[in-house]
Length: 342
Image 1 (tube, rainbow, N blue to C red):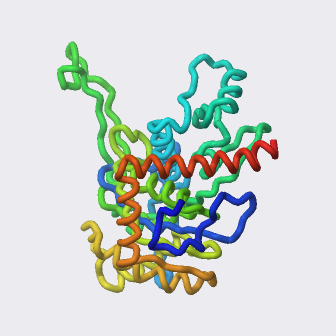
Image 2 (image 1 turned 30 degrees about the vertical axis):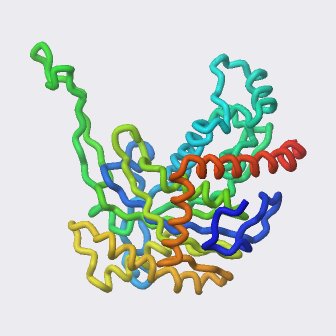
Image 3 (image 1 turned 60 degrees about the vertical axis):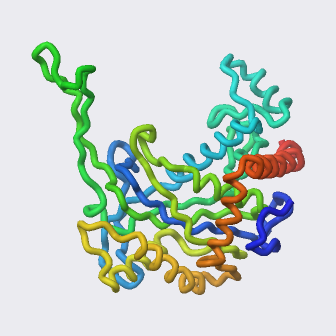
């Protein structure tokens, strides 16, 4: 089944191969904060002290989003869709491990409980990977690296005071004021994190599945039910025979261009159109340095690709056909290679 006409079929496999075959699909995106998210470990925002740009050697501290804080919400968005269309089973609550194992092998697609009892055969397990101790593992075919903010830490965060009022909306009861007041650093809105999502040896269905998960995911970081709103602005795709530049080098190249054009003026936010232009202009030179054979899909050609993808994923019948196809591919891979190996 062919889903895309914009990209040559030679860049995709007809089925998921058991060994690396040298085909890479890179989705170039920029994660833009639209509220006050928390990208933190042990109560503090994650940061890194790095070089400001490729040419600008002065060091700065940047906010970072670690890879798992990007990939986990995206794979959960995909799992939600798979459950919605009946392609994976809900987990049972009886705690019977034998029954869980039997269900995973016996159901049409299998019961799959994230980080508890992976079915080892659905699209999520095969594309994003799993590890079950001595029972087996599957390496992720979706590679996401740490993303870095374009602007420095001091211009990209704010300390907010949080409280938990009583039901009448006040912070006191019976003449006593509650101590449920806390302050915490948050990332401010309109901070930009260039990020490349790589799919190793993709099929067309797998490529579209990962891109759809990326576009659908709206919240990242801690406390995702109340804050953490992030928009994924997808700017292009690179089909190559190897891995391409890192998120850090891409961010540094963009920082150089924006600085040269005097488009960074803290504390004002960077304009989105300036970031988009800098990202698009930085990519070709970075790709030339990577020494890979590549097909860069940006501009009008990428707009055509997105039009194709959205026409498919925003139509219920088309989306269900896509999900069924990618899940069938994963099931076939599991039957042929995962179950045989175990």
